[in-house]
Length: 345
Image (cartoon, rainbow, N blue to C red):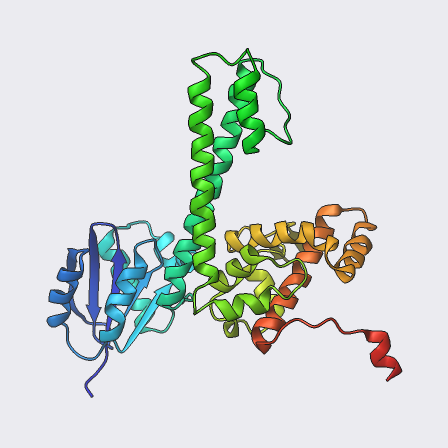
């Protein structure tokens, strides 16, 4: 086998800048190609063998990673927030960026980030699309309330988005004129249509052969429903990549940042570097968890007595992560252990 060649890729929507270097640092080739599969195939035919490549994580990186990986000796994705050498440069362009990524890969200084398997990323795309539908559905519901408030029409807030009450409101309220009624009907139709689409997406994911057993195990945990279980499975990917619960908590953004200099220590309440989808879902699940689990209810009450309800919710969310990690690693259903019975035995 000949010497290894290293390739740095700076990825954009329409083009990909590349830099190919030998192990000693000498530039073998550099330039750019259109960001299409056909052009990548033509470009790979002229590459020396063997070669390894690295590219920065962007929204365009997934298909490029999948297309190049079968042909590369190694394929890596760089963490964008940790490429300080590029961000701090005075002169910055695509050619220089590709060159520096190549040097980081060649010198083994590349801040590599996790790239989930293609099967997980495809299903994650579906789940995140469901999140978009839910946001749009909420916006339509808010718009219905806004239209009624603009016209000075009172309504029952708890029943407004129920189909029967909404039809009755349109039929019996004399203040809803001909100009307002079509807008309200269109908003309601959008809510119904988006709700059906959201239900169909969740059902398809729950019945997916790759996820069905894993989601069933996760849902055995108190307060973990289908949305939380699917979000955990698809956003975490391979749970074995976390060596401890603390690292999983950090990934979910349920701990604070720390900035230490000399004797000064500053900590923030919650981290901004996180998986925002997991963070939001786990916090919402933690708010409901004390209703379904006496253990989590005791934890919430104990933390709340210290004077901060938000910190109590975060403590419950961290405990849920510990449960999720245990079930996912052990590949077994959640079991509630009676400590007093164990002690007596």
